[in-house]
Structure formats: structure tokens, C-alpha cells
Image 1 (tube, rainbow, N blue to C red):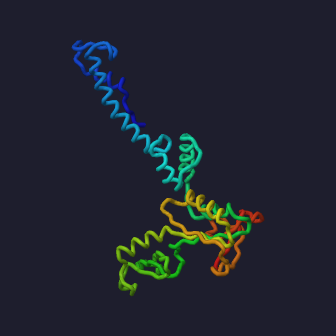
Image 2: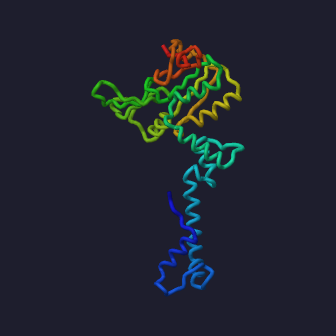
Length: 257
């Protein structure tokens, strides 16, 4: 923990620097020399106070002037009707609870606002299995490293293999953005108020780097999600599921065929 000296502490440091018996010692108001030393200490202490304020705002548990900025960074919105200490504790709870941030957590967050049996899919734009994609064709195992492109067409970093030309700087920037973008597909009609609640909850749950788009009133058949998978959980690698109380895991999934 950083140490920021007070005026009294600085005063004692200055007093100790004087040659022995050259100046009187005592309380600041006793002599002209002690008053002068204490005045200098107060000037230095004011600088320390400013540094302490800046330092405190670097951490959510002590932030005050930057508390709004911390909430925007962590939650994407400001809290309402909470005291300063409650806001700090809420921030700490969120930060300390982020042992893992993944799309399964986003999926079950959305499902928590919907009736049992309502399917939701989390579809990543950078999904390896999507059509087209960014390909690095250098594998010695006959497999390519693929970075999927949202629009369904692909580039490679090798102009000879690609046939469409090498990636430009703007192409690479677009690919990086798309790599962290995903869609929330809700296969049921949802009210505007529920969608708003889902949006706020997802903003708190998803990684800060992510961007998402939410669609509702969709049909499973339009996405070929016709195969039912029982007892799905995070390790099942299923990105479409619904709440199912009869399932051993609490969720049943759908898979495209």
C-alpha cells in the first residue's frame, strides 16, 4: 500500500534534518523556525494529498471521483440509488467473481429471463465451422488455421493460395473486430421490456472486448437446428439450448444437421 505523508510527518522529517542544537524543537507554534518548517510541511503535504486522491481512484475499493468511470468500465452503465460504499462493493464482487467469462455463461444468462423450453443460440461470427474464413495454410498436418469472416467469404494471408488477394490492413482490423462479435438468437417472441433486461444483463456478463447483436422471434428450422441433444452443459460444446427441468443438467440443446 502506498504511503502519503501528512503535514505532521513531514514536519518531523524536516526538524530531524537540522544540525543538533542549531534550531529549537517543539510544536509548530512554539518558535518562528518551527512555524516556518511546519508551513513548508503543509505545502508538501498538499501535493501528497493530490497524489493520494489520484492513487485512490485507480482502485474500485477506494475510488470516488472516478467511481462512475469504474462502473461504466465494469458494468457498461451506472448504478441507481446506491451509496458510495455499496457501489464499491458491487464492483469488487463483479471483478472477483470473473474466474471465467465465456459464451456459455452468456447463454444461461439470457435463458434466465425466458420461459422454460425457449431455445437460445449464441453464434460467434468467428466460428471455425462457418463458411469461408481467414485461412493460414501452413499446417503440416493437412489442417488450416481458420479465422471465419462474418460475411461468409474469406481471405488468406497468402495471396497465391487465396486467389482473392492478400489481406489489407483494413481487412485485418475488420477481422479482429469480427473475432469478438457474436449473435444472440432467441427462438421465440420476446417483449421489448424483457429484451431490455436481457441487454443490461448481457453487458454485465460478456467480456469487455465483445460486441453482440440480439434477434428474437426466430425459427429453429431456419438455422437447421433440428437435432435434440439431452443433458447439455458447458462441456457439451452446444451453443443452442433451453431450460429443461427434466434434464439432469437443467438444459437441453439443439444441434444443426
